[in-house]
Length: 465
Image 1: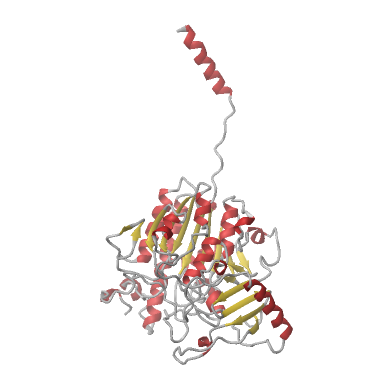
Image 2 (image 1 turned 90 degrees about the vertical axis):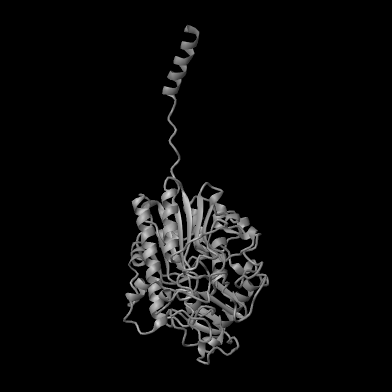
């Protein structure tokens, strides 16, 4: 006994005198929320009057609201490809919506890939729209968990095509409600870990499906399409409220970065599918490079780290990728060739001025560039006609001063030919660095519907009344 007791006592004394190593501080959680085909005017913090959005308004009031927040494409899948990669999607050919075997090229690395490699639990709830082949499935692109659908549009009531991982779900009440519940579940299950959640609603994309109880709240609105749209927006705001509550109840508010954007502007152009959205005071629509297609509601919130306020310099959704990496302490390699920049120094006042010298867009024959207050744009002239969508040519380049003409009504290209020439040359140099689109390019691109997106027989009680 004497021979074994002495070493044990020595070990206990050594352990007691050894320095205590504290667990490393937990990294912040990151939540990306994306709305689908929202109108710029359709949130309370943009003075919307007919749709109550108290939860989004609270997020904006407690965070930083961007008055010049953009997405890199006027279409669903391209802007999501930009968000996921932090790169202009035109650099790797993802210029249009994918179909068939197309999707986010496997050469590209996603934000989920990068965060997962540093210990984050990663999840996506909602709309993917970046490829439906097995190798393009979200769980092959850095996400640990997936609940949602793979295509670009889906019925709000039919379960066909809604997956948990790779398994078809058997029941579905309403996608927006289901996505809110799944996001809450993800947060509750991983509250002791560091997590990244991409919550991508299909609201308020067509088909215009709303629940009866919410439709009843807007019975005074005569326009049936707008009534359904309002009810669908209300559902999304309520789901976001439930997610905010789950974060607060888990004690995670002060260490969770939340961003909110729409994937593009509201579809308002004659002759194409519309959803009742409004882009006031902007001109143009989804599928155009006018402001109504690319400027979106844009909020970044991180309590105790970012002071509430308004950021007026132009920023783009590509920046959210780089900002999330900075929050997570991920060192960005030059080899990644990110186009987005970390917004934190600009939001804290450490840096001043615009995050970008210029922002660029290419969407087929359409283009745009913004430098400072000036924007040069060539856009689908269907945006200017009430002809019912007859094929119209793309316009000649138009120059606008957005500080005095947010509605892009006064073309300055003849008055300021040198400025127009300067911007055209700058855009041309950028365009020369891009690749050709890998697919698509037609004026009437598919929105990527999949099984369940537009059932022939929809239950009457769930249709827009």
